[in-house]
Length: 237
Image (cartoon, rainbow, N blue to C red; front, side, top):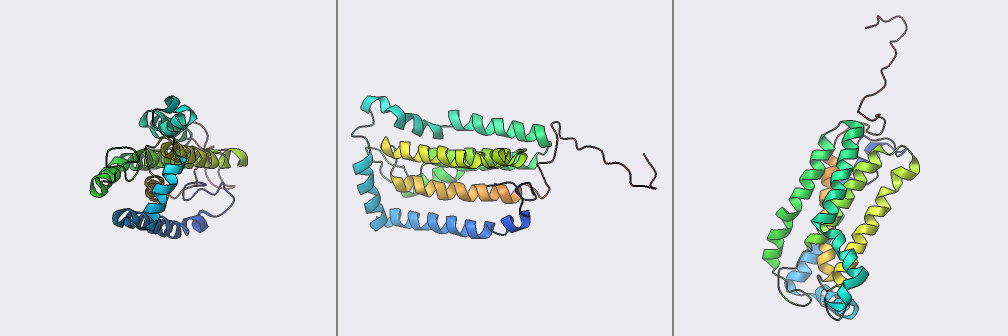
């Protein structure tokens, strides 16, 4: 998540980073399949998952209005995550005038319910307190895609090393806080959160690989590059 393909602002060739995409995608896919399998057969991971959740969650979802755990869980709500993603899209487009990464990020966000809702229906996993259809976590998937895409876009146009790397740990922190809050508030089991992290990671890799093949970070606001001087001996325009 250190820049879109073709962006050389990170100091390493984009080709080397892009070459790792299949490895990361395979890891995320294996993780998603294993978690889904364990939930489906109520395997050892699912048993451990439920045991951990019962020990760590608040005794009731209504405890003290939720406090910090509720605030953290709400980071995965569309009303919070979507404006962050939209703002990053505006900043990226204003700086680069490139539409493809913006469209890819929007498509990934739109894909979240398309992928998550059928899985909820298919697995129909009971919730920690009541109800069913809790696997995987829609809030976690929303947080991963929204904050992950925002970090991807903003780090691509950052003008300094500090600003270029800062969006990534911030995005990771927001996702971890979202998942921890959801489990603490007994809205989801830990495996619900883990599965959505893997699913969201696959969507982020798709955004990164489809977003383009040119350097992004060198453009000025307004998307215009400085006009190059004509080569010596060549006719001017």
